Length: 352
Picture 1: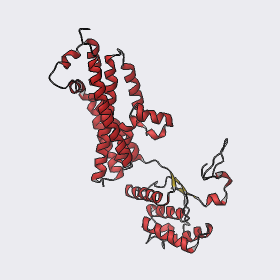
Picture 2: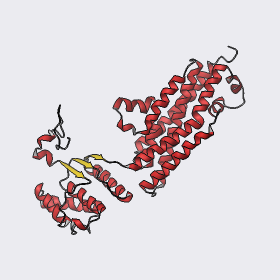
Picture 3: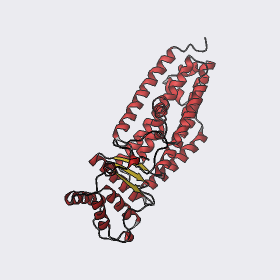
Picture 4: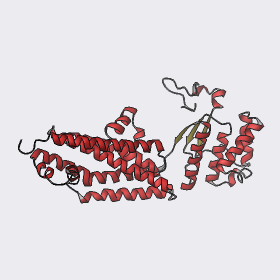
């Protein structure tokens, strides 16, 4: 619909100030469409001849055409492919040429439907890297639809890993802490010569929940194989930091909720709501409506616990988001610690 192939049944759609379905020439010169399972290149002639055909269609000057072709040839490594008939290209080579021919007129908006379909992992990464570079160089808008299974596997891996951490230590310890507050048995913990918060945080361990951790680690390994094992030290460090930040945020959130049991008798219902919202973390936070995405980022920190580490795992996490996650984790750790101390001051003990 945004590219003008379909007409909206109701309302209006405008792209770059144009109504797409009107298919005005000025609009069509500013967009491009790439479909992974459809050919724009002519099958029986050399790639360069198809490029020349598009030069004529878009009325590009020889100078602009040659300049853009040289840039795309360098970025996509097309040198040896230009004189080959399209039928003699491999799938990966053909897709690189399909993307190049679609970009010869330097469109402002790229509609890419499964541009990496059928390609091996290495070629997928090269094309995605090229698209990111094109976006930075020309400021173009890229709309890409794809079933990139490695990202889904990474998301599930982090989800199960974090679920295992919660189920093994955080949830049982916090539930026992709340029970101790109700029964007055927290007195024994507070009178120990160790930090009471630490003792409360490791109060109970459910070893069988480690199966979720093992399952999560297995899925993470599969995701790494899918995206390629050429993981740089910076990439691995980013994932580790994002994972630690997510765990710290989840722990702090649980501690704050559990600490409210100093004032409120029944907190379990709130914890049930948290678990229900956390289960939504099996899907990327970006698919949800804006209001729900904001709630899952700041009210119930599912985004920081699952989506951010999984994006770090597949190399899509920006430095700004990582720094934001670390900042959020630091604020949550400090805030939960202060809230815990304030709650302990209000604890009246078994004598009450």
